Image 1 (cartoon, helix red, strand yellow):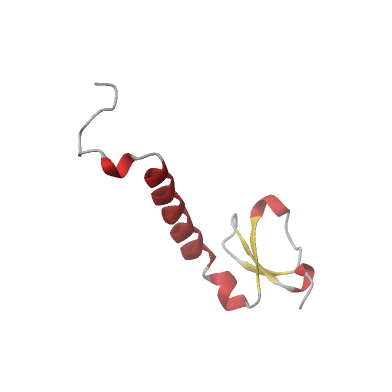
Image 2 (tube, helix red, strand yellow):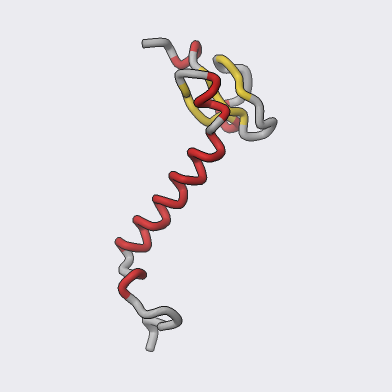
Length: 73
């Protein structure tokens, strides 16, 4: 298993794939095993975000309310 410094990262600021710790951690998503996986980071992040939002909505009971209903009524 490679050290994280030998893996690939997606730079959220530049949109470039980097190998190792080229940019500050706040600007990186990863690590990924290959440059190809790192290049797909935006799609992976969007899908994970969508899935998390759906999970939270389910946990909060939003999916059981009829559309347009307000729990304050």
